[in-house]
Length: 265
Image (cartoon, rainbow, N blue to C red; front, side, top):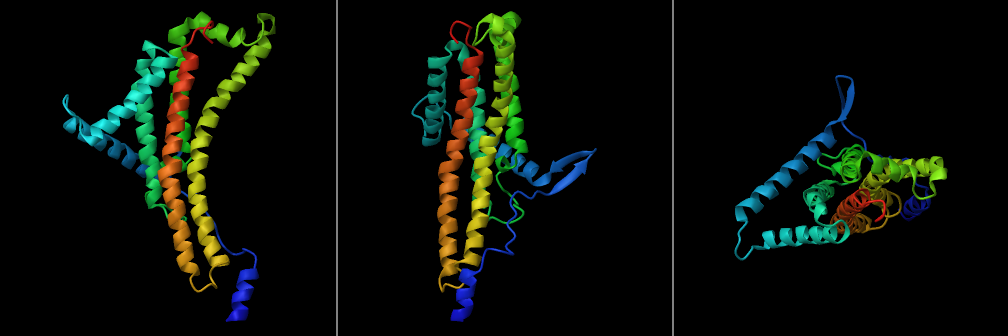
């Protein structure tokens, strides 16, 4: 037993199949769809709607309850951020930023249902790059629409042709600004996806660690379970809320830049 245990501890990590992000895929009218992501996204939407209905039923103009107080505190923080950066016209962004935060937060909390297995019955849909990419595209389209409304077509074009260098360098300005605009949705999506995907990957690695290094230890399985629980708590209650906050904050900052005039910029 001792020799076998020593060999197991010294053996390299081979034969452990770590597969994270495998989706239940179907094709509908030639389009490839991940059923698990659709199911999890729909479930997150239903949770958000249910929270909204509960808030509406409990809302009062008198002394607010705990749930209403938390919501009003969060929305108030968003309003103050927008009022300080964009001004009164930024109030139109409050519903979008608040909805994005709540939806992404709920979706990230689904991480608690994952165990690092190949298929997740109700995993976080934000761990599938398709959902963060879709959210990022929606945000960027709305940002450019807000920029056109604020600056007009002429101001919108001048922003890309005449900044940051003098106007005779407009090809350089256009190139740099296009690269920046293309990078925005990509980085916005990959930041959220990468952090949520890494959480599931870490669970698989911890399970592999238990099979590789801790399997021969008498309490190895117990240690693996403890590591899994600790990491999941960290992933769900710290990384998830932080990433939801960052996505909403970057949305606000993108609108701030898009809705500022050339002089303010």
